[in-house]
Every structure is written in structure tokens, then in C-alpha cells.
Amino acid sequence: MLLTIATTHPPARDLGFLLHKHPDRVHSFTEPMGTAHVFYPETTGDRCTVALLLEVDPVRLVRGRAGPAGEGFALTQYVNDRPYAASSMLAMALKDVFRTAMTGRCDARPELAATAIPLEIHVPAVASRAGSDLPRRLFEPLGWQVAVATGPLDPDVPEWGESPYLDVRLRGTVRLAEALNHLYVLLPVLDDAKHYRVGGDEVDKLLRAGADWLPSHPESELIARRYLSHRRELTRSALARLAEVDDTEPEQLDDALAGAVDLDPPDRPLSLAEQRRGAVLAVLRSHAARRVGDLGCGEGLLARDLLAEGTIEHVVAADASARALRIAGSRLGVERMSDSQRARLTLIQSSLTYRDERLTGLDAAVLMEVVEHVDPSRLGALEATVFGYAAPALVLVTTPNVEHNVRFATLPAGAMRHRDHRFEWSRAQLRAWAGRVAAEHGYTVRHLPIGPDDPEVGPPTQLAVFSRAVAA
Image (cartoon, rainbow, N blue to C red):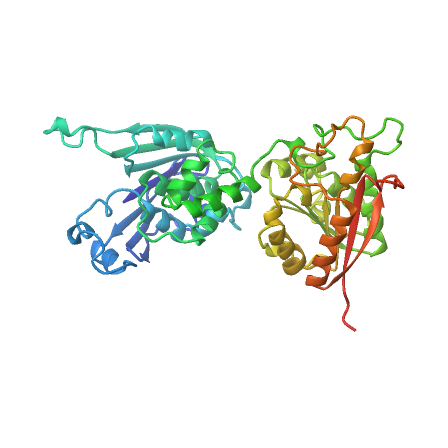
């Protein structure tokens, strides 16, 4: 199996720095299925090409199989196209030999690793029994120009038709790490026949490699299904998790953003969104929080106010949506920040229903208008992540008070305040949930109103303040 990557970005030999493989050497790696070689057939100042050649040992591949002895027809275990056509084996080798490059880290050339550069990728033999159009459907939405060549399976026997093996060339201007992750996911999707048993950890691999591009890909369902070997339960899990990190429109990220129902009476000097942020800041000040997480940061309105607080030393702004983070970065002026300002802010893509070590070590975590966007069946996972794993000393949760909805003349009877809300709690429901969570995870909890506290229906927004209990 062969794959080549070329660039003309000057100086082209710096491709070796990005890949962490010296251009003047041949690098060989032992893989479960054979030996992978990395070498540079072309290295000039104007153009550099790296090749990944995977020599597959069919005997080693069969002997290393997981599964019942005698599975399948014996001869086909040895005589097949696996040693020759790009497949999951090439993707595995790609990940193993270019592991650091796939993360986008390059200490020697950090600015180059973050730059989109012209790349040409050539895979001479790709097994794609779904036809020559599939590579275009997979790669073109990611910004690649795709050229596919094919031919007859046997020129002497034309009735056999077209060969299922394609010659694929990609041309585009992208970050090298992005290109490697595209290949890692999509080569097995083209082949649609993984060489190993697919388990639950494959969902994590898919989401790690595709987090930045797969949720918005028009063929995301097909990609997930093929990558996970058509296992329905894994595909359903992957699609559900992709939905959580989907690049939704900005107005779907927070009640306070444009596009939500206008619930503020015209004579109120401060909007409800401003009052929410003010209440959160007041609690944080009273607890002298220094390291604060804005979990579900949306477009960065609260993060902006947190950074304006001189007593807050560091802000971690996290959101499941890459689009939201781009908007937040623009709103916060990250590109214009000084080094000292930038050091106070960390923007990360993270879902609150999955453990993330980057969310540990916080003094306080704020979930402002977040929980109501989570499916009830996933709330337990959020609780385990925030209160059990990250476990900051202080957790602030704001959420709408559904009882107050009758006071909004512009809100239809029975309607929720935002089209993405999965539920809206009454005061009693929030107290019941908060009390259980606090008891299970070692916190105490108190409740505060945000906005005018109506004597009949309560405030428009309710705030639960969780403080981690101190052992006597």
C-alpha cells in the first residue's frame, strides 16, 4: 500500500518538521500487519514529497486475527487484495507513524503547524466498491479538489467491467494535521471492510479524529456507518454524540442570543441576559474564585465579562460547537490580545457529557443556560462529568423557571423559551434535581432568583449555587 503527500509551501523541506520525520532518512516501523516505511522520494526547496509504504505480511495478518479458528473460507484469508489496496491497515499505519503530526503539534515550527498549506495527496490504489463518485462525496465537502481515475478490471475481458480499485488524487490548502485526520477516517470508509473487530472504542477514535469537521459533513451518517462496520448500536451512539458537537447556528446556542424569543419587557433597564451574567459574577466575587470555567460558553458573552474581572486569573471557555468557539474567539478579540491577556484564556471544544481532564483544577464552573439543552437521558453523564470528575469547589447552574413563562406576552401558551430546549424546570423540579446531585457528589446547594421575583410564579431565571462540602 502506498500513499504520498507533497507540498510546495516554502521551504518545502519543512514538511519533515511537521511530520517529525527527517527527510534524509528512511524510517521503518513494525506494525501488527507488517512493516511501514516513511521516506522522501523528492526533497527540494520548492517541493517536498513524503511517502508512506506499508508492506503487509498476509501470514502475520491471518495469524494475528481475533476470532474463531477457521472463520471464513481458509484460502481467502491468504489470497485477497488486503496487501495492495489502501484500507484500514494503511489508516492504522498512518496514525502510528504520524501520531504527533495528527495532533497538530510541532515545537520546531509551531506557526507552520497552524498554517493551511498547499498539499497534494496521492493514493494509487483505493478499494471502493461503491463507485468512483464516493471519494468526491467524502473529500470535496472538506475543501479538497478530487481527481479519480479508474479502468477495466481486465483489459482482455471487457465484460468484467470497471475495476473497483481507484487512483485518487487530492489537492487543497489545509493544515497538515487536518489532512492526516481526513485520511485516517476516510480511507477505511472508502474500503468499507476493516481488518479488525470493531468495538465501542472505535466511536471515540472516530470522534477524536473528526470532531472539527465530521458533525457538519453532509455524509456524516454514511461515514459513521462505514467506519463502524455497519454496527447499528455503535453508529447510533456516534451519531448521537456528533449531534452534541454539531456546528449549530449561533442563535441555537443560548437563550440570550439573537433568534430566541424576546422575553424582556421593554421598560427594563437591564436585559435578563445581563442580569444573569451579573448574578453569576456577584457569586464568583463572593467566593474569590480565581480559575473559572464557562462551560457551554456559546458566543463568549460571559467569558468576556469574566476576563474583565481583575481578580479572575484564568478563564476556561468550553463549548461542544466549534462554530460557537470561533464566534467566541472573534468576539473576545483573541487575535488582538497581548501575550499576557491570551495567557488568561483557554478556548476548548468539549462536551459536558464526556470526561475531559482539561476541565479539572477549576475553582468554579458556570453552566449558564446549559442544562436545559441536554437530553434528560444524558443529564446523568453531565452530572458525572461536572460534579464527579471535574469537581470544582463551586458550581453555578442557571436555568429558566418554566412557571414564569405565563408572564411573557410574546411566548405562546405551553411553548418553551427556545426551540432547542429539551425541558424547562419549575422551581420544585430544579430543587429536587439539585438536592439529589448535591447529596450524591458531596456538595451543599442554595437557590437564588434572577430577575424580578414574582410572588405567584417566581423569577424568570433560577440559580443553583453548589458548594463542595468541607469535611469536618
